[in-house]
Length: 301
Image (cartoon, rainbow, N blue to C red; front, side, top):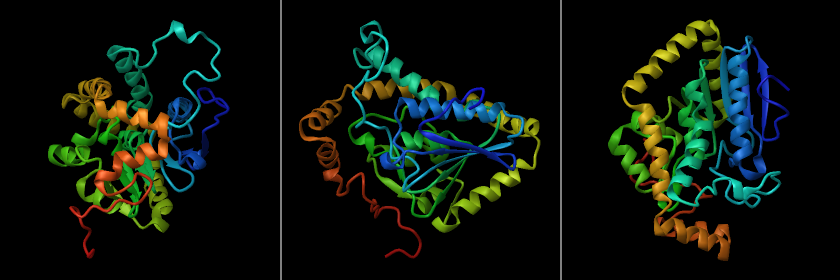
């Protein structure tokens, strides 16, 4: 297809009016991310960054959700590979193997921070776990009022391996959200600073397009200058070190009994039941809208 992106299977790529539209296209899986999907997203970002015709990038998802997290229900590890798995790290054979694998996957998602052109995440439906790793790594996030944003996997499965939470909403709200795994609506995410703007679902496409076209009026060289200096500021605040520590602490969190219990339940009882048992004490389920009585919208009862 292009210099970096070759015949993608998990996303759509289109350029029009100086904007590259990268769209996750696994609606049946709610755009849950497997390794191939993350590799293709990484390649799509490099393709858009390299194309002279592109000034701005919009990342979105087809179907009901932006991204429902990591795909942990797909083919067994190693399915379809053409090499000897015994020759390579096992992913979780040891703490260091796990940290190495988490760092590699996180690096694929952090491409949005590393490329020179601005990326707008257009978020609707569920944006959870790995979905937040992706969206919050973008330069700007616009979402629908009814979007559900958060990291319920922190209840048993680890900690965000790609970490922008602290920079966007501060230490107290970061702890509040990660220590409960609760989700917030798009409206609430806007108040907390997790997203730039929340709009009605019917207006989301228009809002993202309006901003993308406005940004695309500026030459890419100038956009790169603006983006890079802000990102250098993040680096001075320890952003790069925090990403490395976040990946290592995700691997550390995988050593918890809760992590082992979840995957034992998933193997023996099925993924749906494992998720139910994980979330039951919180009074909600991962695949349903979350009620968060601690953060009410104006006008809510």
